Amino acid sequence: MNDTLLPCVELETGANPTAAVIWLHGLGADGHDFEAIVPELGLPASLPLRFIFPHAPVRPITLNGGYPMRAWYDIAELNFLNRKEDEKGIRDSEAEVHKLIRRENARGIPASRIVLAGFSQGGAVTLHTGLRYPERLAGLMALSTYLPLAEKAEGERHAANAETPIFMAHGTADNIVPFMAGEVSKQRLEALGYGLEFHSYPMQHAVHPREIADIAGWLKRVLA
View 1 (tube, helix red, strand yellow):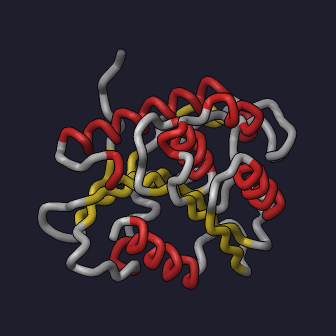
View 2 (cartoon, rainbow, N blue to C red):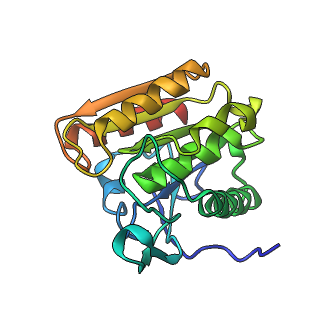
């Protein structure tokens, strides 16, 4: 097994972090994409966190004519509810996230103090990985995204994260991952018994200022 970690951007909000947030970027971006949000969250000094923003591998993307870019898996079409999915790519990225979690464990942060987060494609990997992870995580945060390999989630999910808090957010005018894809994913998760917060904002495929405040409040609750 290859134990090499993906390169990451790391930010700590205080000395000796007691919890970690592993935050996955979207298609074509990189680990710097959400770096600037950390100070905007206004987290208290009493909650020192380590934010880890990994860079996805560069791979050819079918939707973009095979042009290589950073991506967690290949995408052939923008039909998020009924399409052929890159299962191998999704599962390979799941394995990369596992390695990042284990690295945090080795640095003294247990799984129960780790939030998995992601935007768009990164959010899809977050949901996929979090539902299946064999240890309880602190929370899952999925922004402007959908549940991948949805038909396999029930059979593959792990009981350890059956009650893990889930935060989902989506723009009502999203022109990349349609709002309907997020809403259907929410319904699928609820049908499986997951309790989640679902927020909508008047935006396209982006992050809303009110969303940043909602994320901050949620992080403080799940990592209190």
